[in-house]
Length: 412
Image (cartoon, rainbow, N blue to C red; front, side, top):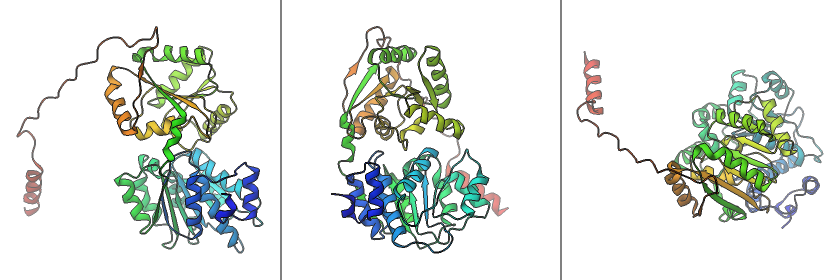
């Protein structure tokens, strides 16, 4: 089924062909016609499913069919969790709108870059704003952004935004938006908090779910290697030397560990760098560009790299530290084996990780064989779990006692 059969015009199709977009993905086939019918959408879509194009293309089509008059006014607002995804979505609007007769102006609003320049670009007139929520609120505080003509409000990777404290920012953002608008929500998961947020944004959305979208991990060779924590770095060097992978993405637990291990690997002669949220935007962009161009071969990253990074051909993903949740495990390993290619994902676990990885296996519906590499075997015994002391009754006041005391004070 070609994109034209979904209602996409020849001008946008021309840009699709130029960028080798031949056939729509399942999420695109379902969502594009619904958006063109002006339906609110609540879509469950994994990273790498092509969801960005599923809202970018129909929005461009509607703007094309209903061209503006006079100076551009903001008609589209897209919120994403990271600067990188913001830039990627903004680029998609520009690339796919390249051949439209009325050029559309797109502005990215992200931290780490001049807020003055972003304000100036908005005030000069723009059709589409793609933003991270924190910087958007900074722009709102300047009282120089008019959203009265807004037609589309899009949340991309909404559950990841929830992890970053978006729930507390949502009301402030909704206050600035007109009541009449089309709402498009995309999220990999819909926990109760996410459903509550969705209910505040839209009352009658069409729910879209691609039943088989997670089968993409079947192209990934998932391995688990047991190793003591202090031997993870030597084991990683051994694997890198043995397999000669082209591009390797290594997930770490925190920013400090990411910087430290990247520096150590550089001392060992590896082309390695770190990637996390504390880096300046210029450094983040440079690091990703060098990784894409294979100037950097090993990227040590926090979970900032799980979503929204447009990097193909990653040979191997290493879980140096395990992710906190089974969902993040799927997002991490999904950075390899993309676009029909095969990939490898390796998780390091020690005695203390065993129970947590069993939970990941259970929730992800997988069962993996434990491996040990000669010279780096897991040694020692698993630590014995110590039960915490039982609470001593009567030491703390109950909620009823606290409420009673508060009422007594208010009566005095």
